[in-house]
Length: 230
Image (cartoon, rainbow, N blue to C red; front, side, top):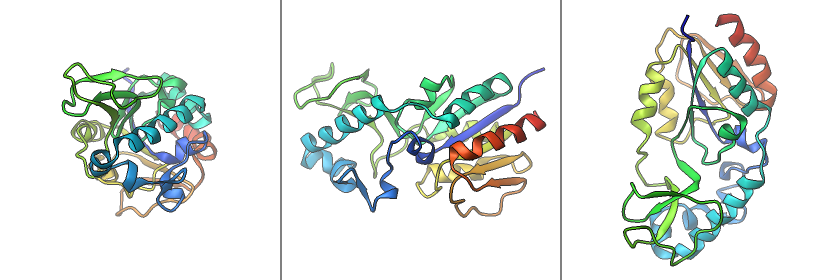
């Protein structure tokens, strides 16, 4: 018998418990950096060296972090479900925990690309420096979707959510669009779950179960609920 498709939307809350901070927890600052100075196309044009410094710093932070219990539970659920993760996070903690199908809406910290050609993407483990060039001769930049940029993977994510048998949201405040709008594409009749330490407001959703706990506290409870309906 085919496994039910479990589509998961994950956000910064799940990574926060691995020690990766989110700017929304710190008044618009990421480790002292103003997001408007480091995470917009305008910032890149104005001061690319500062933007690279910021993402090089974040890359080192991610490399030092470890997947937590919530990441591991999502990976374990692959035994029982066809798990498809749509994440707003740029880290690789889902993959390191063992999740096989992860769609990164906002890019990936361990990738870089040409600043002029989005299809020229390369792996990166260390730092990106001014003067590092892609094959087209353009400066390399982080493979990250910045504020004010379109989200190329959103259509793929919408199709995944539409095809879900079960839909779950974990660790996201549901305020960053277009990602937050994905909940509206889940089939109305399927079971839906939200796990977050502060449940965000959602327009009325049918068949919704709310677990107001952190990701690591709530995911063991949710796993039990899911195994009852598989």
